[in-house]
Length: 149
Ligand code: 4NP
Image (cartoon, rainbow, N blue to C red; front, top):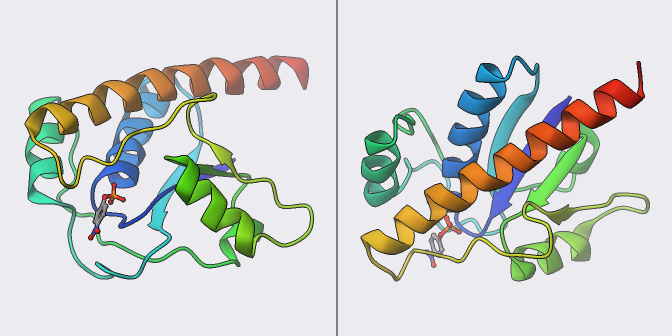
């Protein structure tokens, strides 16, 4: 199982969700590979936003090794789930999705708001939404593993 998280810049939201997912999936005993990408190329090759690094670290998640990369259409074939942080990201993914590819929102019917022009509280919100969303995915992956047994 491979899951790709996608935001705009791949320096704030999707790297945070990736780190939370890697940590919580492992804690839950789920073998899932995770990665992240951005629809835009603004920050390709750069590390995560320093604010994301600092606030994630305060919650025990390590973003130090992250390097931003841009989403490519080939990612649809390489991942089982391509999960967008907000509706604009989802729209951008759908625009380049090959037939049969089904990008979705990471959160059911809700968005992870872009914290880039915000303050620490907005980055804290990303952590809380990441945790809640990852917990929901853990439950979902467990249900489908049980159904397939
Ligand atoms: P992200 O946040 O999509 O969560 O990584 C952003 C990062 C950079 C920009 C916008 C959002 N930007 O406009 O450069």
